Image (cartoon, rainbow, N blue to C red):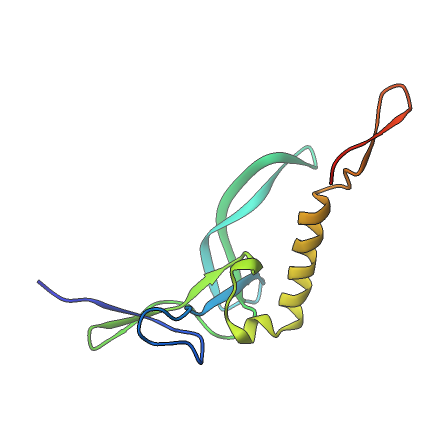
Length: 137
């Protein structure tokens, strides 16, 4: 039986005994990016309007926020495969270089606002008779 080893980078300063946090990069869409991510979720549109709660998966060109040129294909040398973990959810990012970028900070702010207010501000909705009713945030 052949033994396989997968090398997953740990954040600098973390323990190397298996208890340290792994380095997860932020993937963003970029038509000039160095690689194509095969399974990226995109909203579905019909008649120019976004369909709620429907997504489609399609290949998308992009890059890591911390590098304009880095590719993410696994590299195997001497029986050890090195992988680059990545996500499009900024809340899951642990890469210190990604977190320090202006792009990542802006995306995190946008996500925080979306989580706070939802896709639209639901603090007050109009009722059919014209009166308004408050709804929980």
